Image 1 (cartoon, rainbow, N blue to C red):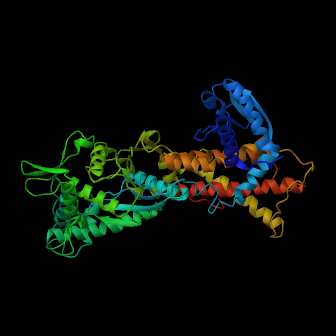
Image 2 (image 1 turned 60 degrees about the vertical axis):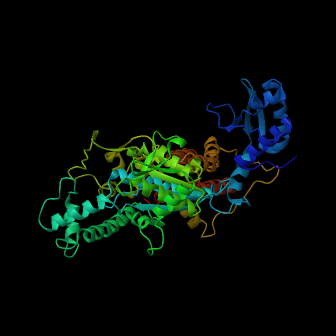
Length: 555
């Protein structure tokens, strides 16, 4: 009889092999899920139902044959298999399968990183650009959500096996930068900024930090202001544990090393002209974006010779493409819905695959206190900043509450709940579970005199205590981690990791409630439960790290 297969990956492989053999060909991908109702097995597969059409037999007849095949393939790992409903196969697994599955988490020869990592079938070189707020004011809570999401997505993609570069696009070119300089200069002279200028105390602080701001040329003042603002932005983002590999200057797209060279914008125009993708009308230069699904062609250069914002954007995208990235991911604000199709059209005009250009639109953040929404006003220059948020609730709670909902839904951020140190606060609950496991493992080490606990396994025919239902449930949840990472990476969904981390912490709490860990006389049981605790601690820590949240050893 073959050895029991170890873990969900091998279980899925056994089902796929049985399906392929029955079909006489590859390419049929059966599902494997945990049944929603108790008593329906440990796992269930729809393999017979999706195979029935191919072999032209009833699903239940196919299920009977697959059941026999799986009994051979799974050996001692399978207790029994039942056929349910129209042809589902419910698999009931033995304690041996669960023990082998737990062992396999730390022993796989193909595993080069932490449990659950490196699962990408086709690793890509990915550029993730996020935040990219204009350097004309402090970051607010909307930027905090963008920063948390972009950073978590980059962490997940990297953990999954992709080569990821984080990028911030610095909008340091154009009228908004000149307006910043005018506003700073006005404050330096003791005057009010113009009606379309920037207000708020931070402008006064910028004016105080720039020598001769009242008398220097306004463009110099503007660039000095940008430099100071970028320092503030970096500090604020670092407080959220967000770092960038590249800070890309928009101004650099319009600059050249010498008069003979082309700027990046001019290079993009020349590339599009060579492809026949631009035309002149009424003195302006237009890009043929309607041919790729846009609602109208777009102006790149006005009749005055002035470049549009779109010109910078397409030059920037082409610059990235020429840098050799396989995929470009942009995390954009809620006001960018109309931007998506035109950028995909522009990308296609350069010969790029629009499917490899992803533009993810974030939704808003509503801060709630005492059940009421906290007002925010950008017009007056007074708003809740990223720094304010981190100062009030801490970086861990800030990131968790900004990440525990899908990016395309509005977040209602409960400031009161985020500040609580109780089991009602999900991030506190998960962190406390990690700290509790860490404490158990420390105590076990102390009690063993620093030798740790041996990995003792029952030998053939050895009687040992059956696994408790909560032990099985915790192992099942641990086994689900690689699939959760893969889903979070594929769907660009960090909130799935937050949900998983909370469920894992709940599964551990149930196990700890029902199963004694320390002081167990049965050495086999003690070793197994400590091994289970060790893998739980590592997986909670990995989950929290993917969210950019700390995993404290003590609380």
